[in-house]
Length: 189
Image (cartoon, rainbow, N blue to C red):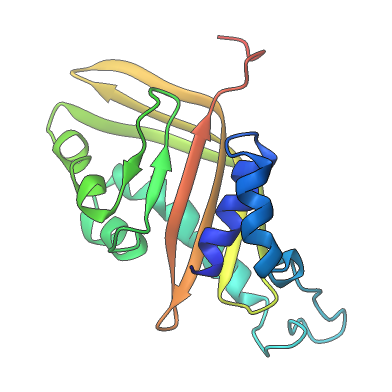
């Protein structure tokens, strides 16, 4: 399994979505230390151990923002370029219990997003945080998102949405492997 899957398993354990026994079996052979964030050098901005610069974090943030912002101009090639093109990709959204699993499943979303009745109106990403793995080829993020749109002229919005995800660096490029969107139970409507 890739390090992205290990981080995801840990996140699901943390959120109570997978049993401790399942995680215990897996983490006995995969030390948690292998996925913890590495420290950045205070003097050079270089990441300890791999030579990756802090520019990776800037690219990661732009990639994450583009995964929502593409819709303002319906720049489909941009979104397709930043989503993993295999069965490892998946996401959960607040509207259901069935995840999007795999790139082919993800592509079905374009039926809605590219429809002329759908228009993205604005988005806002707040409290963005990203961390790199020690190996430098996996990152995870969290943020608060407003993702607003119109459908047939009627406004809608995911406001104050909790957003987390995992990216993996493949062939020198950061791609999104997993995303989870959710609403807090105590949020105001």
